Length: 372
Image (cartoon, rainbow, N blue to C red; front, side, top):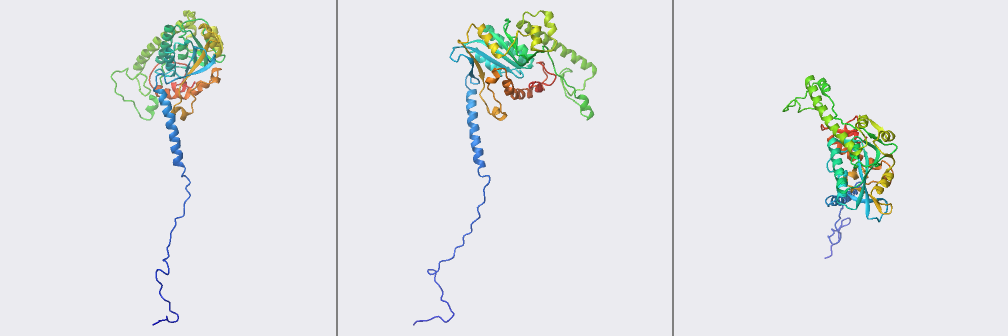
């Protein structure tokens, strides 16, 4: 029996006839502005790790701290003249100058040294140690040493220059060099009166009345202050006598009267220093190199002049330091001093507050003086 739907009625549909409606909700895609940042950080970290690994591998090798670079004259000559850089504040320890001397001590092909000094000086102990090691190397190997002074070679810088074996005609100063400043200083600053105004007192416990000598915060009675000054003056006098003995060894032609006349702490220009007998000639690095070649019995064809550089480390990259001497520096530029200046400041930052004596050409704390 065929049943027809009534007019206006609709027949129900089956699932097979009409598929169910699907609703898809899509989240609008956001623009990822910084999606590249993690990849950039990862890339930079990888490059830094590679650079640090390369530098560290050199540091942990025997004599790996230094690399030898050709400077001038013959590239193929087997015999060498080595330029040793003494730049910035002399703080002692196993610094760059010490590493250069150690490298030369193991290299029998080095026949002469040109000591390039661009330093205002440094600690008494550091200056004396560097002088001792250079003088010992010179005596052991009978190496001629020629001094080339840069912008400043004063106090401890001049002290180190006296390790020249007492030879004649071996100290060269550039026309604009400042040198001399033969003397000793123990810096001391008294902040006790300023602290008293803000009701602060130094109440340190010591084992004896002189244990706190040079403390900038200790309020001393006049009797103790006078006693401390006498003790410190005796120390300065003894170290000053040592300084003058070293100058006599490097400048044997200076008699006592002539030495006393220049050992006043005064700084001299190159011309004044030559007239006073503190230097021999006014000339540049290449002039000192020629003299070293002559003293070693070599020629420009049989001498290879070399210089030593340190590998760049992460700290050098962060500070933008160029630790390698450049051709401009070899011509008398201050590039080497400027490049190593920040490193000297970092070294001095820890040391300048420690009570100690200085062979230093400055009226400021060592932190500032290292930048002369």
